[in-house]
Image (tube, rainbow over all chains, first blue to last red; front, top):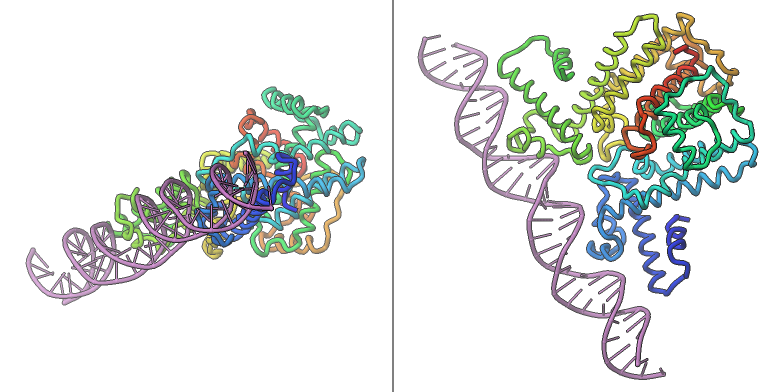
Length: 247
Length: 247
DNA sequence: TGTACATCAGTGAACGCGCGTTCACTGATGTAC
DNA sequence: TGTACATCAGTGAACGCGCGTTCACTGATGTAC
């Protein structure tokens, strides 16, 4: 269920000894409790002592499993990215391969559903940075880019299939500096879509998370929008139009 | 310079006695130091004791000016909203009244410039909620809605002037529940634009802050985009197309 | 103008709290012969 | 299979820290007569 198992299965293939299984279980418990704590008090207030209390163990015992507070944050970050990534993958995989608009919609809805269900994890991943904490890039980059990689994957497949109408609005000039960035992305992810399409993909990406963040972070206020599902779906429709995909 | 003066000028008209001026100055200092602290350690770590230290005063002395920690947060919130609102207003006012695309661009650029200059304040206003803190709506709603009110103002003026091409893409059906929300907004803000245009306005709003948040919160990573100004301007262009305004 | 009193700013000590982290330790679980 | 040793999980006390908040207080600044 949690992605810890996946991660540990990747590093160590064998089911291992009872002691090792107990250890893996404890680490999973620590992450689970950490996530609960995150949900209740936020990332900045995450404390090893509180996790130890919930675990029913003396505070220093946690140091057998986690080097320090920052590492617990890192574990939660990675676990969150993988949870989100798993749900997004499952949602997209359930849509026919040639239904690009459907895949995009599924991805977007999966992101939103997860964000609303796990607002604290969403905040940790996509909200304001945690003061004094710097994520270790070598461990977080891969899980942290799963959603955007998947998104551009759909995007590029649609382009290759000729389903992307890039000329949907008058061509906008892309400055050379921006074109260089886009070229680097194209090379790294092995894409075919031209600059104008890629740039629209970035807009899609930021807009999607902008809409979700407004909802999760309470920017809409309590009463302004009661029809939030409908609002979100409508925004998706318009965004699909922006990249020239028929919903 | 800060908007405290504006606020206090609104409640008390007179320049007042020396003692009162000294008091106002001290409150302004507290807010300034609070903002610096915010920038260095984040909202969750904001402490009255630290502000007192920077103010060169014993910790209990701050309670002469601020009821408790939460009220300091509220002051910072209101001050931030007003700072942003002032800059946005100034930027928009500098554009000719009939140049709606220019006004929108000016608003967007002002938001982004302020956010990049004051990332901590931006985080407090638009990032993850501060755990354990609930903003008092009766004091924050008015300053907190200045930007969006200004945005829909531009938007509606463009519509009334016939500059908004609402039929830019095939009409999307707006569900009844969402239409009700939009109708309430239309009444409250005295707008003329139809549902489809208003809904696009909301998308514009969330997309704008989505783009800014990604940049401020470091979601782009350190290297992916070096041409951030160009990327943002390009996104504005596309968004202008979405609402049917010629940039 | 001068005195008596009220208001206010700031002091310093104290309260109880929770935090991260270290360290020497006790037992239980595993491993090697 | 049985014993001797190594590894590991968890204990409990302690360290130094910063926090929010209260309270009785000292002086300085203002106000009323």
